[in-house]
Image (cartoon, rainbow, N blue to C red; front, side, top):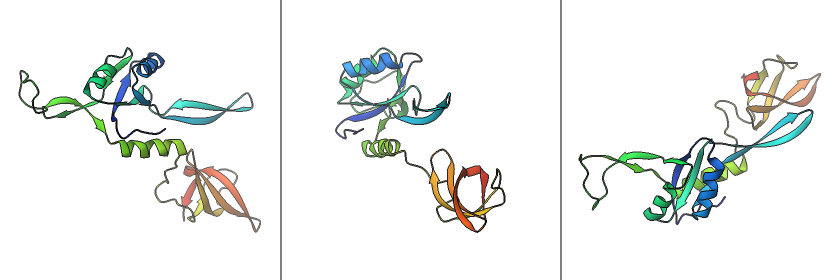
Length: 183
């Protein structure tokens, strides 16, 4: 997904069970949108199936041209709210009953949002603390319990690929991150 830096990007929350209707209405209102999704491989009746799910349920990032376009997006059926923060009143805005801070839509940095979109698209794996490629570990549980090894790769889903020595031969084994201890 390409995030257009010329647009102002905001976080919108959708009403329960109105997600598809709201996304369709946003498309009709010509509002750019990005809804991060992740793919999971699950096994159903012995077959591997790729299941796509929302990374942030009922959340969509929207890109608008100006305040009028943002007001149009707010009026879309199925859109619950635009995530906001407390901020000072804009200069030249009509005065309200109470002076002080007001709720303002939280604007996102398009460069940081593009980095986030790229990380989601590439399935970027965040390395766990303390465990890195080349770390010496001992397998704690399972059939390879008490076998020493070296981490070859960090895999998605909190898994690691460990090269263990079995009968003098190095064999790569995939185990859970919780199943190894650093030596």
